[in-house]
Amino acid sequence: MTIGKLAVIGGGAWGTALAQVAAAGDRETLLWALEDDVVTAINRIHENPVYLKGIKLNPAVRATADFSELASADAWLVVSPAQHMRAVLKRAPCPNMPLILCSKGIEESSGKLLHEVAAEVCPTSPIAVLSGPTFAHEVASGLPTAVTLACRDSTLGQQLRQRIARPNFRTYLSDDVAGAEVGGAVKNVLAIACGVVEGRGLGQNARAAVIARGFAEMTRFGMAMGARRETLAGLSGLGDLVLTCSSTASRNFSLGKAIGEGRSAAELMSDRRTVAEGAHTAPILHRIAVDRDIDMPIVEAVVTLLSGRVGIDELLDAMLSRPPGDEED
Image (cartoon, rainbow, N blue to C red):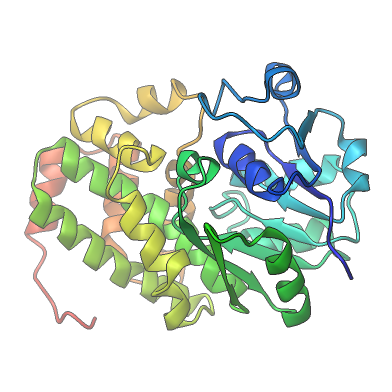
């Protein structure tokens, strides 16, 4: 099987950046976007001024709002927001071709990982997951990036990697699909917590502690979901966690930072055109953790903050009064 033409579903920053990667070498790439202004701008001026302003796109990227055109591709990169993936795939002409899932989250209504959602909607499509520390602007600019491509079919994984890998877009193969997805979902919630630390002025020591203890929570959750420890310690887990917990270029970190500075979570989320996926993932992540008796106090604290039930100072007092346990727990 030769994978040539790729289609990207999702015209946000990350979808546009992936289209830029896919079009390297002037290879025809189709980008499906919901917004007419995005489609028009990409086709007329080769730029996405709504979500990725200032990046000149390869003319080989062509945008469309017509799902039927996607059938001409050999594989799809699915970059729709996690909570809309099921609906988008139901609208699309569900193919027998590979689906590369590039969004990060857990479906709120079902508690399913995204590869499970895709398998329900498109049961005949082979599924892979692309995840890792990837700020869209840097990827689209051609700065060095390394990602995990998880696929249970090793032959297909090699074919997909051959198609999308570039010297500045290093792609490491794995067969741990669940592990790649868990890391990407959990880190978004932990990034909100680190943003709160930054916004509250609690210092770099505190942020490092949240990253380390958050990684312990990610590992506990991932292992319970069937992930492998080494995947969680790799690019799609620890690598992505460090990136998104360290910069306001992360939507989740910037959301937490604004909450730490005293703004209302409800106000912030209603005012955003782009999605801070961790805000949607946190409640379902916490619910699964409670159901499976997985200790995730940082995730629980983020859920509490997002709900507005408890103020930051009260929550911090409660967190700091927790008795310390053994580090390996």
